[in-house]
Every structure is written in C-alpha cells, then in structure tokens.
Image (tube, rainbow, N blue to C red):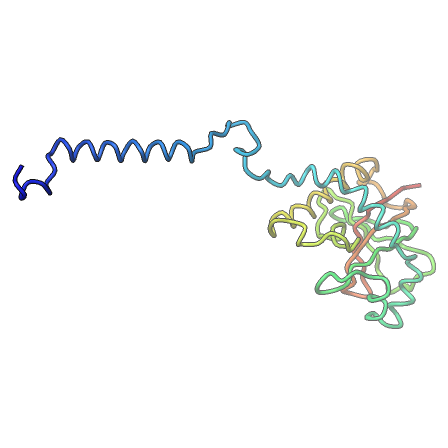
Length: 214
C-alpha cells in the first residue's frame, strides 16, 4: 500500500467503525436504564393531596383544639369591650387581617336566614349580635385557622391549603350539623362551641365545631 493510501479507511472499514460505536452506545444506554413496573410506587410519582381524607382524619382534632381554646362568650365580650386588640392577643390566634377566636355559649336561636341564625345569649350586651352558620353552605376558614396549628407550610400549594379548609367545613356538615334539624332552630336553645374572626367587635359570625339543641 502506498504511503498516500495508508491514512485512508475504506468505506467498509468506516462502516464497521460506525456500527461498532453504535453498538457500544446502545449497550451503555441499556446499562443506564432502570425498568420500573407501571404499578410500582416509584413509577406512580407523588400522591395527590386528598382533601376529603385529610378533612375526615383531622376534623376530630380540630374539634378538640377549638373546644380546649374556647373562652366563655361573656368573658370574651367583657374583654373586647375593654380592648379589642388586647382581647384578640389574649384569646385569639393570628389569622392575618384579624385574630381567630374560639368561643362557647348557650342561648336561644332567633329567626334564621340562609342557614344563619342569630343567638340571644343571656348576660351579653344587647348591641352584640352573635350569629351561627348552620348550612347548607358553610363559608370561611374558621375551623382551619382557629386551632393555630394548621399552617400553609404543611401543604404543597395554596389550592391544597384552601381545600383543607373546605374539607373541614364538609366534615362539620357530615358529623355535626346533619344530626340537627338545622332548618328549624328558631326559638330553640342551642349550645355552641365554635370559632370566628374578630373583625367587628359588635358582630360575631361563628362557625360551630360542636353544637347541640335542647
């Protein structure tokens, strides 16, 4: 072979080199690939948040926490009359725009509208309006926020955090309000342990955690 041709590869030799390189690459890819069964935990990814399951599991804990924190309405009303700010700090949980306060009282339900009943509680100032929401729509995040232990950081995102509040409201309807004749409370004596956000010192809209009728 002449010196000029020694540095050249024949087409067959070049093709052999490319085929060999391709085989090496495929073998390397095979060693680096992990086969995962489609039904295995590794292949399923992170589980989506189940608000329904979370609410069912945590509602009893929320009930107990609100019951433990609840201050008698007469004590709270007297404290608020002196200083709304001081009362909020003493009895409430920081909930952003206003403190979330757990309260307990017994009184007579007045005429309701859209599932919300005013309750006349003996011994409280006459200019203080206490109302209790009984559904069918339960609004707000009182149950989630009142214990002071459920934080945004416990959840993946804002949607899950909001869904957690809705799930607790759903459990309230299932576990508490469904056992009451909530459509016919007018004139009846009710005992409530619940929570509200202290925005208006003269108007408390309470979400019950526990409620009984006699």
